[in-house]
Image 1 (cartoon, rainbow, N blue to C red):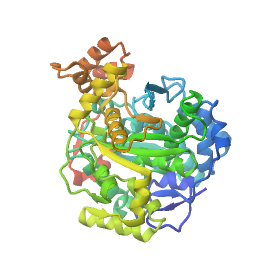
Image 2: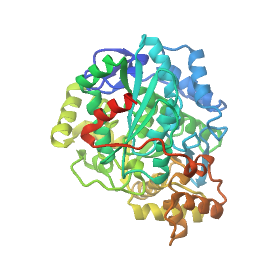
Image 3: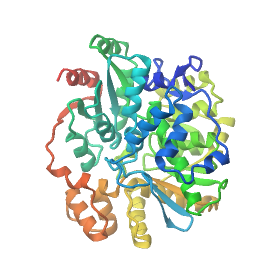
Image 4: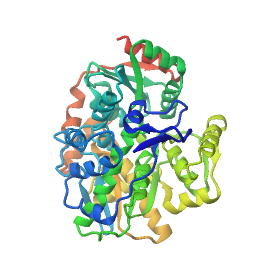
Length: 496
């Protein structure tokens, strides 16, 4: 399997090269040269397999640089004792016709663990494969969860450094503490005085800056990415769509071959893009429902084909989705344009210079046929958390609540009542105050952790150890910077 860039399209790279580089030199994202097809017999054969075995099957289609034994060892190291559920991704029925795939049973209690527990193994193996002897500096921007998952995955991994930027006022108390208390001699956490889009744009500027690359090379270092722009982040996410599907078959919710709808809360589009890729491989997916919060740039785009980032930015109760520039949408544009590199470059240049672009005609029709977009504001999210608990005794974080609310909107608008799986992206205890206020009302406590303790007592849900221990951990990372000074902040981190 080879990979091409969304902005160049011809040069072929191996999986190892794509993973080490993270992003192409001209700023494009690496995509598979083709999508290997899986028939129903091959998909059905996974029904009785473990999550780890399913991962080996799917990843083996794309990571052809590595032997089956290498992939098996990496997968077993990634999805082992760090996950508190034997299924890795449990799929639980909460209502007739609706199930929830819990993607948050890893060490940082968020779906980013599904990829970032594996990426360090992929990165080090890929570096060895391509003969990269320089120290790899993982650079990541986070809206809350990627940062901690990357730090946890790369902490003290030989031959790497991990630098994470997060919006100073744009993450929850638990998310911030998870990052700033991170141990590991090679970890660096820097607060950006701006929003997530500022942090993400800054990371992209660094990747595209020849002077930054030259400086790093002089230091014996090279940049790579832990964001979902890196193929090594995206590929593992395909696995949980296949896994959720065959679990629905195993549980008798659908028959093998039946189409299954997936509802995905997403801001950067990577999570739902993995579902698109799974469908391209032959997974029987009906409709994908893209769920946005008040920062509804994706929902608006899916309605009229106009992507306009020139709008107000809102801080919401679902902060991991507070994003206006959805990086992975570029990969989707590459597909719906028929892989026309010139068209993708035109759209991306328009976004860079004008803050907007427009998709129309067959490309927009193809997009609408596959993905339905909707959004939910904070009040609707709070009501959904409350109703989900009262009706079904199920506790949900605000991002998953966005998805549940948007799915209800979708069914009402379309009448499509096919079995649906909601992708649950975080533990409710990562947003304890928001969840407690929704189900209890009139909460006076200002501290997230006090709310988490009360939430556990009230619901009987066990407070995760990773949250319970956070308040007592020492803060190790206090660095801050302006969005325009992020490379200088990297240099200071490398000199520590």
